[in-house]
Structure formats: C-alpha cells, structure tokens
Image (cartoon, rainbow, N blue to C red; front, side, top):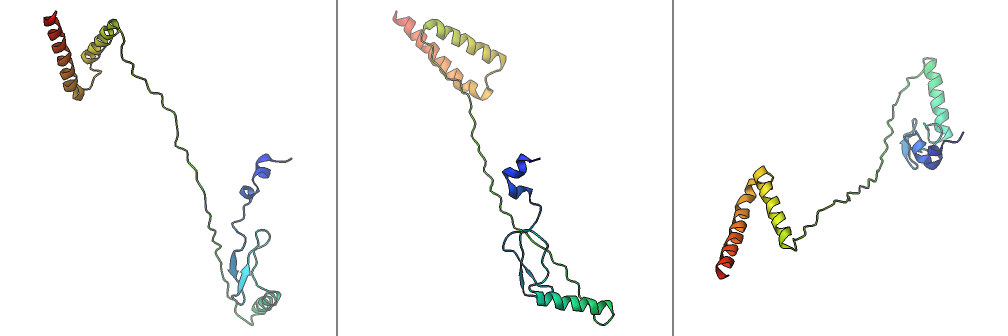
Length: 146
C-alpha cells in the first residue's frame, strides 16, 4: 500500500542523520571519507586501508598487536525555514453621528446610563464633564436669545 505522506515528501521519511557531501576521517589513515546518504556508514577511504585494518584486527585477535577503537560522532546541521503569518481581521464598530435631534436625545440618555453604571472609565470623566458643561452652556445661551 502506498502511504501518501511518504510519497509527498521523501526527505521527511528519511531517518538517516547524514547529508550529501558530509566527510569523516578514515579509521586507518585519517584521510577523508565521503559519506553517502544511503547505505552503510563508511569506515575507510580505500580498499587498502580496509585490508590493513582487517590485518591489524586479525593480529590483535591472536595477541600480536593492540587495537585502537575510535568512536566518531556524525553531526548534522539542519536549517529550518519558518514562515509565520500574523494577519487577522478585526471588526471595528463605525461611529455614526446622530442626524436627528431624537437620535441625539437617545445617545445622551445612553451615555448617562453608561456613566451611572460605571461603564465609562474614571479617567475619562473629566473630559466628558467639560464637554457636557459646554453643551449645557450652549443650550442656556440659545435659550436667552429666543
């Protein structure tokens, strides 16, 4: 059975920590060994080094030579590109000014209820009081003219 996620991105299904072009040191001579992406992890740079190492192991098994065991760590550098989108829509209420006097009366009564119920911040009360006093002054002056 074909797994769609494996066929869609073959690089993500790979478990090998190796990258193409990665280089290790030869277990015998210390020369460069190019690591392939697949297959066994190479230990020697050439068949000659492999044969010499094999002869050394055989001699060590017979007690004729000492063997030096070398552990090698394979490091992998991975660059990950992260794309983040920080856009979202916010609905904002559009302020419409009342057009008729009855609408202004309704708006002022609503403002009065909001002030009495505490739905207007204390820090805004001073500015609001100044605006209301100007409105009351305009109403008084208009009443004197008529």
